[in-house]
Length: 95
Image (cartoon, rainbow, N blue to C red; front, side):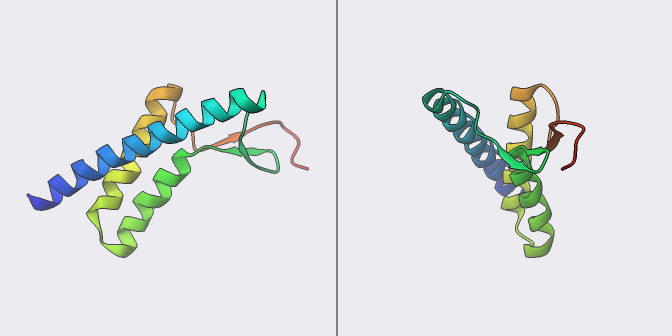
């Protein structure tokens, strides 16, 4: 039962991390007057990838908190974007 509580606490922490990243992104985009993205060639990497990496990390470190944090970030990003996005193709050209 202890591990369930750790996952729930991690989920709340992950959701708050997602909210903080999204709020900072919106405020910085307004200040810069352009959108701020992590781009690798023609791919836009969403911050839900951080949640995915936390979830995968939990299998190697054996810590239940990373399961919750990863799921919290992914769920928060999915609710806000209304779709499950990790990496988005910006255009059809790859160079």
